[in-house]
Amino acid sequence: MKIINSPFHFKGGIHPQYHKDLGDREAIRELPLPAKLTVPMSMHLGAPAKPVVKVGDIVKAGQLIAEAGGFISAPVHAPASGQVKAIDQTVTAPGRPCQAIVIETSPEQEWELMPPIADWGSADPKILLERIGAAGVVGMGGAGFPTKVKLSPPPNKPIDTIILNGAECEPYLTGDNRMMVEHADHIAVGAQIMRRILGAEKLRVAIEDNKPDAIEAMAKAFEGVDGDVAVVRLHTVYPQGSEKHQIYAVTGREVPRGGLPMDAGCVVENVSTVYAIYDAVVNGRPLTRRVIEVTGEGVAHPANLMAPFGVSYAEMIEACGGYVGKPAKLISGGPMMGFAQASGDIPCGKTTGGILVLPPREVSNFTSQACISCGRCVDACPMRLIPSELSQLIEAEDIDGAANISLMDCVECGCCSWVCPAHRPLVQHFRRGKAIVNAKRAAERAKQQEAAKK
Ligand code: SF4
Ligand code: SF4
Image (cartoon, rainbow, N blue to C red):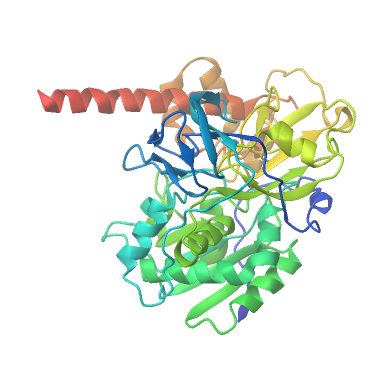
């Protein structure tokens, strides 16, 4: 099994303090089943799932409880056996309201699994793809894009390289690292299932060089796997886990502006998602749980917990010994791309990679000031944008002007905010600007569809 050192460095990026030592040696442990699960219908990108159960129904773990709400969507399955107590509203970590199915869990757990596909190595790729869709597998690295759609590129976009994203470049987070160390063999099977679906020649496992145990485990797991397979040791630099930057670091290819990984002949999939592919195909188990790291100096015993979807952040923190003193900040995800939360009463879902609790000494209070044109944000931006100018256009409500200088190419990595000496809330401006552009585009599409009907 080859281990290659990445020869390609993307422009920009930053080197924050990583704090990985809080959790990277903590073996994954099972979270005791909570009494109640609030399972959101929007744990993925695209249309929310539609409930197919009603209040009072008895459900088994793994049973379908909501069907996909459209082509870009994913079904949802019961994370535990129990009774449906309510179909209510909830709010997910990015602040989006959505429906949720509330399940009161029962002491006896019974699973309803799909039939395992034992002959996955010779099975029809369409059957494998259907299984991944039926199991509700979505990108677990943060975006939540439905995996079945990602693994169905159009015929004019052939894929020659599959990249398993094990970079986990966000500070603090270690769940993917633990998955690679503890489940390397299963991830290797998931990767071969992806290869059977896509027919790609090359399989690459991309891991930053600050995770030597994961590099060793994955290299061992792929020994004996046929074809052009290699682990690529990446430089530790944030945001090395961003799809576009990882494709460049692994292949030297650039995804064109406004383009997708398939435009560079690549599919990139997070290692936890690849494990979910294995689990869905080989064990017939739908996606109902994931590893979530509870970490930070503000929690008593940081841990990597295998948790069912719908458990609250507060219960996860409690399972790790609770808060140390009064927390200053609760973040869903890592400190760079995560979302600050007003309370722990938020349900975990398919894209919850971590829960970070920061004590007051780790949080600085500041007031944002005017731009001093120092140019540091331009040097740090890995997308070669001009964050200072973009933010000023958005503040002046010239959203079209910002879109004209590539606002939509911003990957919201936060490098610009991290280096800004004026503490300007640059990413917040970009998220707001992008939301306005997306809403405008959606309204235009709806208008065109309406006109086409007449
Ligand atoms: S958040 Fe956007 S503008 Fe800022 S550094 Fe990242 S890609 Fe560039
Ligand atoms: S880093 Fe901050 S102060 Fe410097 S140019 Fe960028 S926005 Fe302005």
